[in-house]
Length: 227
Image (tube, rainbow, N blue to C red; front, side, top):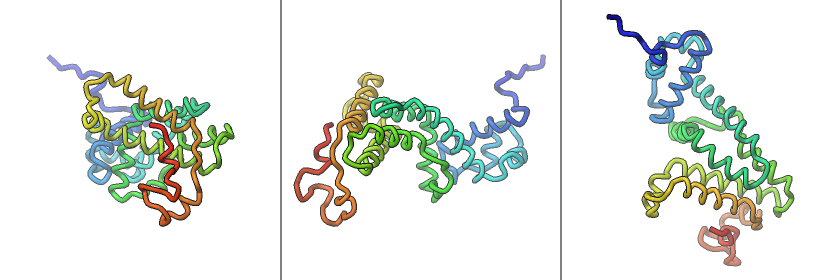
């Protein structure tokens, strides 16, 4: 009796199906091992195609990495379109980690491999949209303050997306309801974006005048933040 092959186990056919299978396989492998530790043959094997077909459609592994990142940027652009204010911005930024967690891991691993990410990324949709929305509110002391805030909340979200299990265990939260914890994190992010605290360009322009633990006034912008 001939064993029937399920549809999901069949090799992809047609240009679009092949390219999507390759991008999916590359995303999975790049995020798990890093681009430097993955070969074209590894990707072709997972995509269930001949590696020569991969070369035909993408040319090289570097071009494939570019395509993987560009697809993620396009998906993030759709998420960014939902941002209308600081509250929705904080929520969409955090929720993007569940949708695009692999994207952030690929960025981190690529940078560790020495890839110049800034040269191959076409943009940063969520950060750019969030900056634009906050600038329109005109409640912050300067454009600098807005950009510093967006950079800080993005760094917080990026770190959380990569080390959440460690953070939860270290703080005794691993047995708590994860959805409730996520809502609490989003609330913190919203607070960081919504409540204006002046950011001094003088401090940023002259880092040697103070250290990380104190300022001349003893009351830095970071010290004023509510956690």
